[in-house]
Each structure stands twice: as C-alpha cells, then as structure tokens.
Length: 316
Length: 224
Image (cartoon, rainbow over all chains, first blue to last red; front, side, top):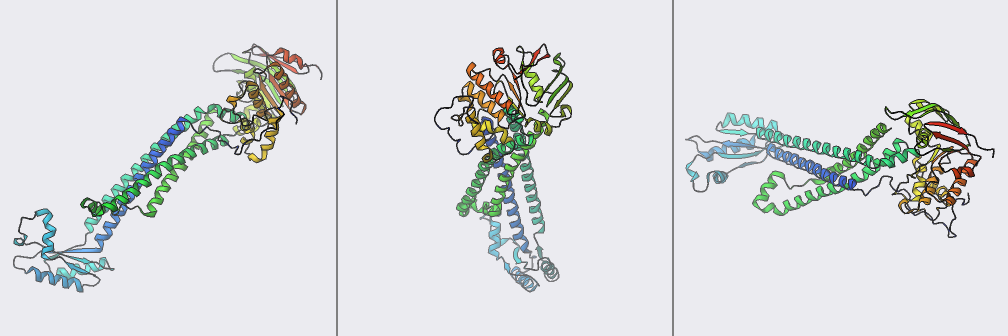
C-alpha cells in the first residue's frame, strides 16, 4: 500500500515505542486508588486476625504441652503428721514409681514464697499448715506412669493428692479454641466485606468504562477478552493493595516480636512472654500471612472477572 | 452478505422508528446511506452491526438469521465487519497505534505478529508520524483517519461508516472517500452514511439508500 489519504511528511515515519500492550482499562483512576486502599486495609486486618489466632494457638499448644508433661502432688499433712517426713516418703514413692522422671519437691520456704503474692509479707506462714508441693515429670510413658503413681500414692500416702493438670489443660484448650474460632469468624467477615467492596468497585469500573466495553465489542472482542482485561486490571490493583496490607501486617508482627524480645526482662514483658511466648510467628506464620495476601490478590481478580462476565451478559 | 426482510424497530412502547425495510447489501458493493438528520441512518447502521435487534422482520447476515445468533456468533460476525463511528470512539488513553491495533489485539494475536501491519496501515492513512500520539491531541481529520484505519485493519468483508467525512474539510473528505472506493475495489462491501449530497454526486456509481420517515428508498448508481 502507498500513502493515498493524506500527504505524509518527507521525514521517515517514527516507529511505535517499545511496549505496545498498554492496559485497555485505565489504571490511575480515583476509584482504582480507593480500591487499593480498601484492599490494603482489609488485607492488613485479615493478616492481623490470622496472625493473632496463630499466636494464641501456638501459645495454647505450648502451655498444654508444658503442663501435661508434669504432674503436681499436693501433700496436706494432718495435725499429727511430720510434714518433712511425709514429703520424703512421697518423693521416694514418686522416684521409684515406674515411668516417672525427675522429682522436684518444693521446700517449706518455696511453698511460703508461692503463697506470698496472695497472703502478703506480714503474715507468719510458719504458723499455718501450709501444704507442700512436689512436681514430678511424667516422663515418656505419660498416662500409664501417672496412673501407676496415683495408685501407689493412694495405697502408701493417702495425705497426698495428685493433679495431672488435665482439667486446666482442657479449659485452656477450650479457651484457645474459642479465640481461634472467633478469629476465623472475623477473618471470614473481613474477606466478605472485602469481596463486597470489590464487587461494588468492579460494577463501578464497568459502568465508568462502558464506552471502552462497547468499543471492544464492536471491534469483535469476546466477553471473555473483556473480562480478562478487567481481571488483569483488578488483579493488579489487588496485588498492590495486598502487598501494602500484607507487608504492613508482617512489619507489625516483626516489630511486636522485636519489642517482646527487648522487654522480656521487664515485669510486664515477662507476663506477656508467659502468655504469648516470644510473639514469634515463625517462618510458617509469616508464610501464612504471605499466603493470605496472595489469596486476596487472586480473589480480587477472580471475583471481578466473574462479576464482569455476569454484567456483560446482562448488558447484551 | 446482508439482507433485510420486512425489518422494523421500535424503542419500548413507542412508534416504529424504521419499518418495512427490504434491501440487500451485495459483496463488493458500494452504497451511500443518506437521508435527513434523525431519519434513522444511525439506527439502520446499528441494526446492520447487530447492536440492535429488530422488533419485526428478519436480518440475514453472512448467511445466518440474526434472531438465532448466540453471543459468540455475534462476536465472530463482528470480526468480519469494520465500523467507523461518527464520533470516532477512539480510546483516549491509548495511542493511535494501539487504537488501530485494537481489533487484532481483541483477536488474541501477539503484538509482534501485527506490528508491521499496523505501522503500514498508519502510514497509508497518513498517520505514520502520529503513531504515539493519543486521540486528545489529534486533529479531527487525524482522528477520523485513525478510526478508519481501525476499521480496516482486520480487512473486513463489510465496512459500515457513519458520517466518516463529517469532521473534515472537503479536500480530505474526497481523499477519505477515495480510500473507501479503493477498499471497495479490493473486495469489501462499503456502506457510508452521509448527508453530504455534493460528495455523493462525485461518486455517481454508488447505490443510494435513502431513509426518510422510517422508510427506505433505493436508487441504483450509474455503471462504473
């Protein structure tokens, strides 16, 4: 073909610049930026919920593992009993019971120290028949060793009560389960709220770009092609929002972990560390947060694609 | 190629805006669609483009009854039709090159496979120096040529053009018309909606479809 319509200048025609594949849906719109903010906030909340649930589950698992590996024997002396002799006897029974490990008796002074936070310093506890505590490591045989020790104590030292911590462990398990279930419900709510926001944004974008959609149809684009364009547009927005939200959440947990390390020697820090461990999500936890952000990105793209396809069917 | 049988169209519960349309568009034919403003030229073009469905009658397009077409069928048929809109309908955020390449991109072709083709067509319509310009900075005539190039890039079997010379000076209008004629000689059926009588008189061989009061009258052109 030769120029037939307009007079070309004598200069050689310029070649089109590098990448020709500009997105068909304009990127830098106010609605697009607003969606990035919404997705970022929702991703942050979803990651925060998931991370917190994971911390609680990890702490609960650690607590239960700790308390179930030991049993406590409470020695309650009668008015005529020699407490120290009774403790020695129980230690001996525990020591020779099958399957038990280390036996650690608390001295009279240790027992008073344990009561001091509740009864104060002014009371002379030597005047009271303070029970004595013996902690026994249940060893590798677990339930069988505890049953054998319980039977031996019942026969030889009826003044001693054995507590295997199962009631407490069960309550902690139920509480942790409730917290994790609540976190899961919050997570679902955040995702539903985000999906709703994406739905509104997608419908808005289709309406805003209706002329582009019409032109695409007139030049022979299929609904699938149009939906793919919206899909990549929203996936990109979702990726930006999820990266911001997920990145902020990861930074939050890293900062919390660092702060908990710094403050572990303070009284408050020690209690927090006892409750939540080192606030450490660990590599799997952080991988989980990245997974949440990735799912948000995919969800944004797929949801918008589905909505656009449905909208186009109605339009036609 | 295209056959209207007793076609009529009404919007909602209103009167029929066009009715009793009976005509055919033959392959490799050239015709003007004319009539006063508001007579129904654009409506008729939209019926041909399948963006409107008739409320009565039958449209046969490329051998198929339009009433039986699925969405995918319509998409496939539109790929055989080039269309030039009165208001150009170029996408403002895309360059001239990208706008012209749009139908090929919609076909799923790789950019490297059509790059030379698009550049050649842009040079042919005189936009070789304006490939990277976006429509808001193009003149009316440049937009018009970009819109025409976009319609031609898929080498359509049928070209529908709505007032393609409405925004350009008479000299450029004649050159644009010569382009359509050349396209017709290369094998494309051309339908040009216009109310520019002087222009039509310069191409006396063209058939004239005259719309008035929702009806159609046909005047055959002089032999070429």
